[in-house]
Length: 106
Image (cartoon, rainbow, N blue to C red; front, top):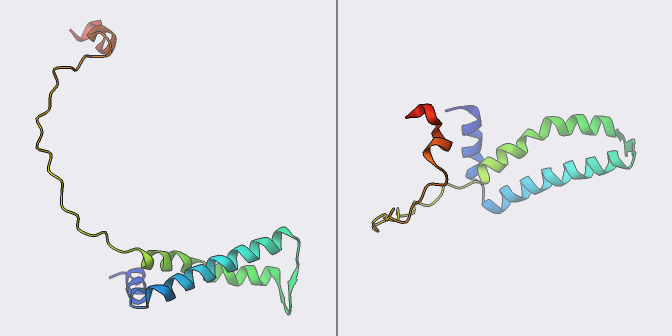
């Protein structure tokens, strides 16, 4: 088992609401930092915006891990059976065989 799989299994043990909250908080933090960069803010209290972006760069891969943990396996749906006969009597080719395959094919 890979470390990523172990981490996602650990996150899946958390309640779904908590996983969604973690994901939302990380995404909103990234959006907030991007907004601050767009407005030219250089300091956020005692920390510089550059340092905050560096710290976020370390934390941001967790968004992907939490997103993977939030995905559930699809339910096993019964396979629909197709029991009708295929009727190709109305099928007409679009072009002549020479146009499609070329004269050298025959």
